[in-house]
Length: 462
Ligand SMILES: C[S@@+](CC[C@H](N)C(=O)[O-])C[C@H]1O[C@@H](n2cnc3c(N)ncnc32)[C@H](O)[C@@H]1O
Image (cartoon, rainbow, N blue to C red; front, top):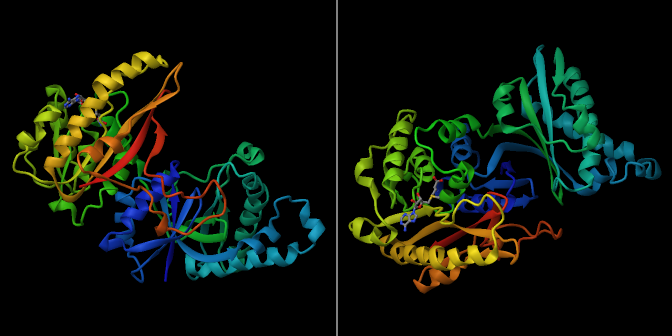
């Protein structure tokens, strides 16, 4: 069965959680057979995925930066012999030549599966190494010794097999020296046309088990995301939710494909970020806000994005996006049962400086918690049985009293909504490294949205 490398974004546990949910879907049934803090190795039930399916997957996933195909694998023991933790060990063991020969053979055997029969043409490669974790000291060894080895051998081998000339992507010397290199960005896949037959990005994904060699098939295209985020006509919030999180939150809903029959609600639309991305994924969107300006702005944004979509769903935004306070939700949407609710209420004031505990706690207790409470009471009424809520809550750092977080689990439980784990530990293999372990309690994952304000992700199910 074919294996794929999914390169994960920065909040890797959240990205992994998203993948686990997507792999439950009929179109993409599969499992994560190995992972690190940078990649997930996935085996699909279908014998082979078509390029269109890979493109679809890349488009809907918020947390996956690149998707590549696995060509070969070398176990950790052999690989470490070729590139020891301490490079001085090479001379001590003296086995280096054997082990390095195996790495060289790995490259040789990958040429045909990646490039086919070579032509008398110019070839371009970019070698991208993914460590188990970026902070891993071994990553420096990989950059300083493995990367030059790869560049040199790929050029040699491709020429031997018939390439007229070969150039490789040169990373800045400075980062190579420091050992702080990042593999090339996803948008370079498009910039350097790495989808062409004679131009490829070769991936080396290291895990506790060994090293997977593959090549990139697709990558996130930041242009569309950037356009939606920056060019939409109505912008209001300094801290509107980043698009990658919007996609992840939508994917955590476990909606059924095709999405065009799915009705999804954001009851606190703000400037409509969530609805914009849900609509461009082909979902029937509904929204509400107590601020009429936000309602009008969101409708303007939705009408604007419609022009860029190939087959936009026909939706009457005037009917679907309404001016309503959270407590009016079930009354205003009386005849609809939603397949999902996705929302980031962030109901705290913009924090320009670190707040005092007493002051912010008063706001949380008197305004924020009661609003979440009202929200969950209404969610219960408007949600279809078995459907989910994907929601964030703020975690606020204070000057003098530590962090304040909101226990959404308690509020949800009050209304009979049960909490769902973001990562189901039974769905992935076990790791020995403490930093990679999944406890199964990761139903709450935090990420920084400003210096003092973080967000926690939650899923609930009716
Ligand atoms: C921070 S915004 C959401 C931002 C949105 N996620 C985005 O990225 O554009 C929160 C919204 O909740 C709305 N809101 C606050 N209290 C509300 C309430 N009680 N009922 C309905 N909407 C409310 C505000 O008007 C504001 O537009």
